[in-house]
Amino acid sequence: MVSKESRQKVRAKKHLRIRNRFSGTAERPRLAVFRSNNHMYAQVIDDVAGNTLVAASTLEKEIRAELEKTNNVEAAAYLGGVIAKRAMEKGIKEVVFDRGGFIYHGKVAALAEAAREAGLEF
Image (cartoon, rainbow, N blue to C red; front, top):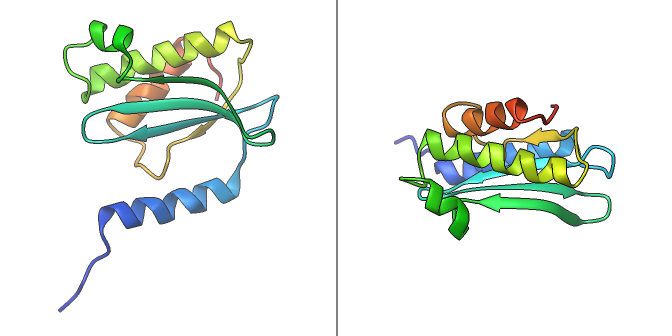
């Protein structure tokens, strides 16, 4: 019988491989994305200093008020716009996109495209 690794373990290994390739700096921080079954989270991180510079998630009251559901593509796109706007207010224009081991499709892609349209460069 063939046993398969769980999707969660596969994603975690993929994320470690991705993280070995790049790191966020003060000049070009890392936009890290995590999605659960019910919510999405995005952070702009300076890995050198170990600081989260900007964060947004669908758990926040003001973001949740704008959304009908917190786990669909529209919510991800809205979150991408919010995180980009907050980053631009802090003076962050360029980031490195960290998809967190998730496939660049659906919600993750919607968040990335909305962040690009709102002015972030990656």
